[in-house]
Image 1: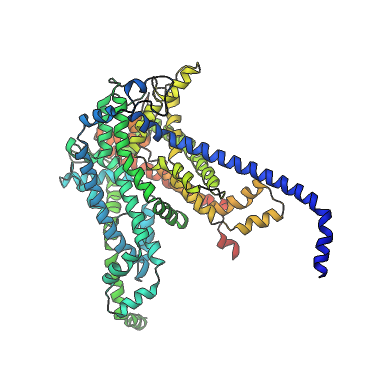
Image 2 (image 1 turned 45 degrees about the vertical axis):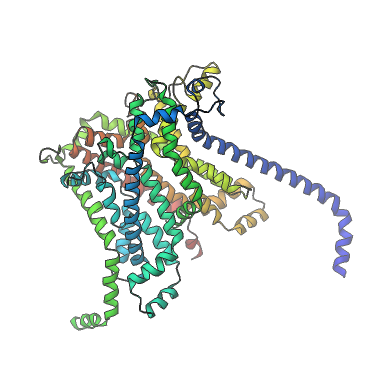
Length: 312
Length: 308
């Protein structure tokens, strides 16, 4: 009773000043928010512009491509760039090559990295931590150090100009990054489930296959999208191992198309300027699957990066 | 002693031994992988680095000559070192700052955060070859988007990739667009900072800048540390964009260390010398990583340390 009296007595005096102060805080807050949104929008535009320019150029007519002022929304749609690009390279073949490598590595990585991750996460044996630390340290090794002997090995095996050098190594644990990511996830799976299965007579392989794998879909999806993206975009590996035109991956084919189109250096105008729209058309076709993959699986990208980034 | 050992041995039960065997079997793919694809090639490349090996003929032992040649006879080596260090010095700190800035903008609780995040991350999913082609087109001397505006404003056109002065900075600026991964790592780190810390600081009258300096940076320092180390390692391996856009030119202004290794190994087929270059790169990266690790005691703050 007394308490309400005190507040009601104090309020009439404090109120006007309070609202004035509140208003000031509110205006400052609004200005702050406005600036944050402005910065976010500005940065989004800058980061989106290169991709937009690629797509827009690919559907312009040649005339519009070289007109000034440049148009950010094409006045006329044209598919001539795509038609042009189609003639120069055997894109379905290159797509097939890329997919062979993507699927070949993906299966190997998913199978072997989960086996290793299970061993690291759930089994106790001497030497486990040592191997784990060596594995993590191997992530810091620059690939240039191993590439030359590995190349010589594949040459001796007569595996050059085949997909084997790109696929076979993926079947050996699938990379420290993926094992680490899946192990982190496995350790969060409740151990009771495993104990229950053990009592029912399940073997360790059975537990791995019937309990750990189905429960780890988020982690496995994250690994899957990273592998697809990594293999699709890989340039250096295919560059040194693949030679013949029929073996080129999409990324390599795009580069070959670009050298066909003219000088790589942008200071030299392409000999055939009509290839600018074709070049952007090809780049768009190679890029779009990754954009769609990212947008549809964004959650897994983010979770995967966070899982490895923070605890690493 | 022997008795104690025997007793210890007897204490290893059958189930324990089973688990040991199962454990090694489970991790056997990665153990084999580390041996075949990491350990052996690393040792092999160290041995090769002391030889003259041109693929078609068996290697000839040279001793330290490849390493001596690097520092005395090969001018490219010094050029590549300068180019690479300059590049890392421009690209890495600002790239990390851009990522941190983006993450902090996303961490302000704005509506539509995931949409903005998508835009910030998009350039990171574009294949490197496509990125190179798009930038080559945007920065093209005669018809590029940027130069059309530069020209319209009455300035002379900028020969971005053709001028030795601008080629390297241009490549560095391009990398600032592909910092999506780092940004998401920072964002996760920022979300992990307990809001109570900021509230306490506000009660003490701390402004925005003080909060950033005394809370955000220390709490984020383990994440920063991780990204600095990984960023250093990765930026020394920069290759694709330069390979496609400049091929090391003009006048070797963008002759990156990695381009040099590629050229010596796969164009000149000087595998021994290239292995020596690769090993020297490994030593440089090790030295720098160790320096960062050493320095980390001074600037990386671990919560668990403070508590104990």
